[in-house]
Length: 56
Image (cartoon, rainbow, N blue to C red):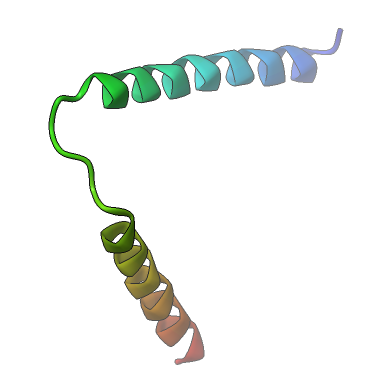
């Protein structure tokens, strides 16, 4: 096994742990969720701003 493969496997394992912890924390959060429409509106605004910046 090459050193780069070990780094990749270690990185993948760290990311997997981080992701699983984030999901678990989100599922355990008793607060209200964010409605899909609100999330999409925020993302659309971010995309539009990025496109404007790219054009100038």
